[in-house]
Image (cartoon, rainbow, N blue to C red; front, side, top):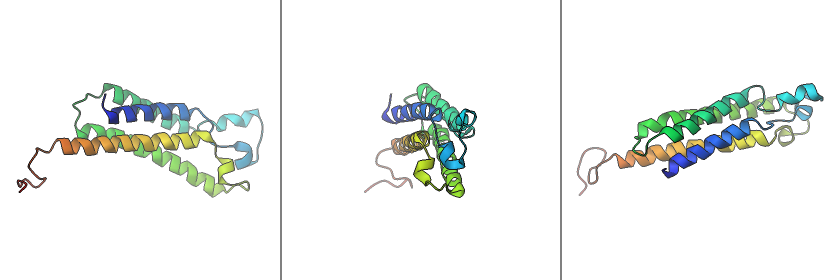
Length: 150
């Protein structure tokens, strides 16, 4: 397995695990306590399902992708990773809009940070694979404009 595929594989695993961890603290964010509202903390209102599904797709893609894959074949991984980053960014924005009295860090929990780390790791892996593949597809001695190197 190539390095970038391993990075994407590990990022997918991290996204799957983080999607089932608490993303925020309901008592701090909304001022409500009780067993009936604790389920909201895990993956915060179905965002965990989205990022978990993205992690699963990245994981399956990293397993099924061949070593001879082109840069174009890593584009879906980059798109999915960017989507996961956007989901987390939207959650961060929503916490800032609610503006809990205890503060931003008290309102958020480990799951949202692990999801952000997994999404960024997947994005780095996909973009790294794309950049390394684009260089590998260029014949040696020829620039991108088709002129020989002097």
